[in-house]
Image (tube, rainbow, N blue to C red; front, side):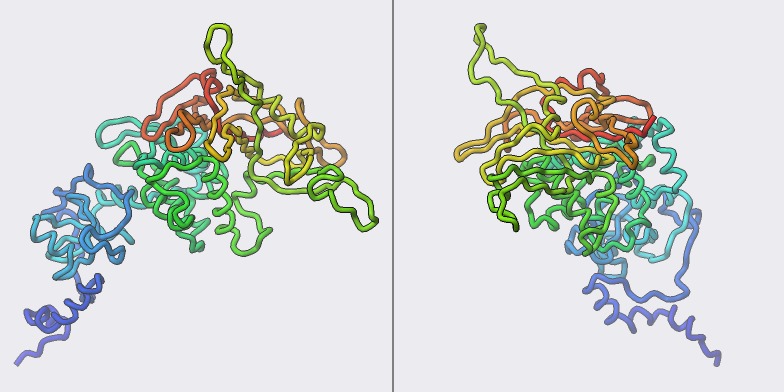
Length: 487
């Protein structure tokens, strides 16, 4: 009698019966059954269900959890309806879904492999590469280097044109304060280039870092199926890392989130070493000389010689706060409120080492810039809080969108041998707060698209072009300037 080979015996009709206990265990755990080493791989022309894939239903922006078990382990996306299911073996949710709905094409989300269920064979076809790229966009170094040199437009499946790198972000409820921060970081070239190359932070175990990198790659993806991106997975990581200090449901402060986020990114990227630089500190960190006048604040106590003198400290900063003058309390003769205006140069005089800032706890202090950052973040202090309510100052700040020369306003640091260092900045992002303070307000953003030297206004999913003259006619709340190279 002919003796069967072990491989043929494994393919026999008794295989499912003999290993049903293993399959049930695998299904219960959400993992895949052990597959035969001879499991077939078919080309797309050999699969009768390849043309049932509906790209318009695919959305990889949401948390990758099974819609039935809510487990994030071993999840597959149905390429027909777009829903996520766990497992692919018999008695798993994906297997059951394929039988009940006659949907057969499934992609494993952690590696992009495509399987036909319930048959269980893997499918290979060039048309699937587009879907894999949308699932996990990747960029070559030469592609990253050309982003600001070439004006790129792309088209979604619905025929809508969009700009890679400048797409709308979904406001799921009240996360517009996060959206504006992400949109600005997507315009900071060193940070953008760093996070578009996933190999730079592949070894980082921070979920927040990984999710932010995925979000930036999706924002800059030129092959998106739709013209917007949902930051759902990123917001889940934000809520987890911040212990729900920043959430989707509750409106937050854009500057509070910015300060927390860039500090957290710096800590996660640099590890435990406090002074170890990261891409965040290389972009945003500058240095201030703070002089506390004798007899106030930390200069109250006498020094070792028994004298009360000024105390001078050098402190790093990631953003600078600018104080607005008090808004007028009374209406004019026409019974209308006057909205005052102030040049940003007047606000920057806070750092000329002459103006004194009074603080009950910190004392009387003077500030001087001793190191200019590559990207300068300015915070316009519009909100004042007391025991009863928060008040918003409506003063309009006049500022240039190009060639903000700090040397004309404040002392700037010089190099060795009194070498003149660059001190001229161009605006790349302007965050605007509209409405009342707190939950009643909303955020929008003006961003500069370097490849075509044009300005756009972004508010959640809406992206429209705007004249640069209109950028300054708003209640700016936060600005990011890029240091120009020495000409």
